[in-house]
Amino acid sequence: MELPDLLPDIIFLRLGRAPGDVDFAFEAKRAAMGPHIVKRWTWDEGFQRDLHERHYAEKPFFEIRRREDRLGTLSLQKHSDHLRFGEFYLFPTYQRQGIGSVILTHCLAFADGIGLPVRLEYLNWNPVGALYQRHGFKEIGRSETHCFMQRNAAGQINYER
Image (tube, helix red, strand yellow):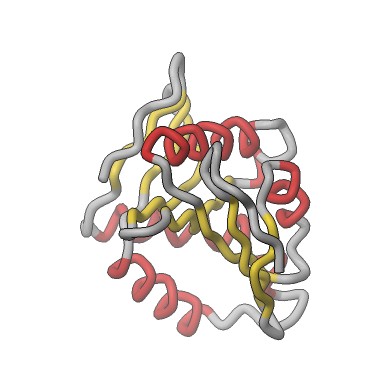
């Protein structure tokens, strides 16, 4: 599955298996998630690298680019009954400028166009949850570490827990 570009200037490039692509995605994760991970655990480079490589092998990753700037990554994976949105990491330079909202809105419009709900998860203590709530996501589950959310496609009924 490909993600359409967000005109006029944001494009989504599918990352491949080349070491440079894997490394770029890992650096985006480290920059965006590192501060949230160390609130609960230490940053274990080997563990984080292994976890990243497993996730990278399981789902498609896209580089988010605006003109020549590499803003970060996201993953959008189509399943039979939903889209899975994740690995949404913006480098700190691009955070808190509305870019994340614009990209998320674009991905949700794409999901609406194919009539599928969107599911995601995030660390319970990561403030990104407020962004997802503002965009219509509802909590559908929670673990000790993660909040699981869903946003139904436009026109679908949203059943709350």
